[in-house]
Length: 252
Image 1 (tube, rainbow, N blue to C red):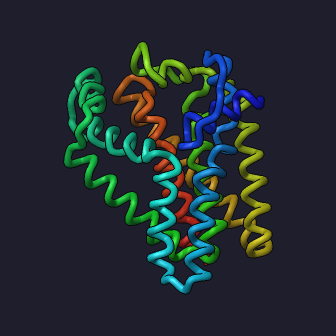
Image 2 (image 1 turned 60 degrees about the vertical axis):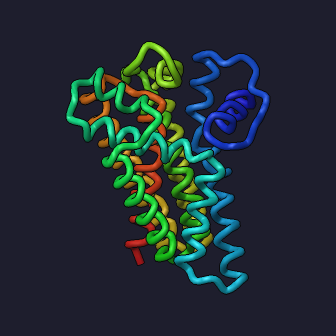
């Protein structure tokens, strides 16, 4: 498990850790522990939000800086995946050509618009959340909860190589359910600490909404592309995190 956590942190954040041999068994552990790796970008965002509050910054400015900190903590890889998936799905081309579009280094109009909207929504939602620091942590962990579900048994890789091929189909469904139960309990505890019973319910609702949004996106990606890729996985992280933030901001 320790090796899996190190690999999860290395793959999903900017923190470099010694990972040792990387095979499908290690990939399975890393994907199961991906939600724990979300504490790195979520913690970075929470610290920025708390610092912004201490310095008297406006909530919106602090939220924008927190989103920037999250991007820096992940090398913006998930945002890049979101933009690439938007370009691939928006191209309207057959699967092979859409995958080729996603592999290009440039970003097309669909990707640009999706990226801008996601960042704007994330910043606005963080600024509107009753407890922005807790919201940042819950959203970051929820975003990475999408990964064990996207890598569960029966979900194929869209390409023969790359990250998608390494992790696709490695996680048993019951293990994904177990990871979800842990994240729901943690979100409820964090919400309760911040806002009592109402906060606990809001935390669990945010996790449920984020996971639902990610699964819908995954279904669309698999049908359209034939499976998952590294870009699809990154996009799912951003979709789940954004949906969770919207719920946390919308609920009183």
